[in-house]
Image 1 (tube, rainbow, N blue to C red):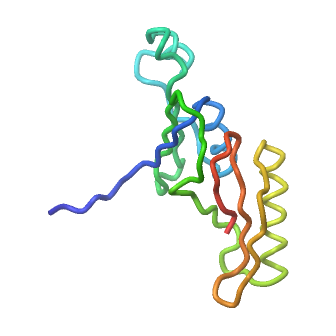
Image 2: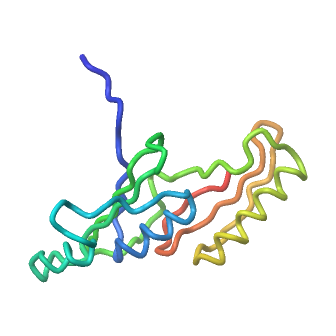
Length: 144
């Protein structure tokens, strides 16, 4: 059996482009080029039936190392905690006050982009501190 080498992470959301652009800023990702034959994504979007316009958007790691993120419009609102979330690794290798300072600095940057700080999970002797956050549509993620 062949092993899988690539995967994408898919987000259900109300406003795919808005959420995708938020995650581009968080992760340093970029919007890929539009499909061949279209000068812009807006041109491509206008070519779709009205009910499909604005229904999906994506972003990619410019280095090619990280997974593609895909955002798809769904009719229902988010009502429960995510079963899966992203850990944004900003404090790797840091401990104590140095780690907290790195987490707080990134938290402040992301709040400026529309994220919401939920709570600090303090170091407990087994795990280091992390910050629970929400993106622009309330999807949880951690600054770790």
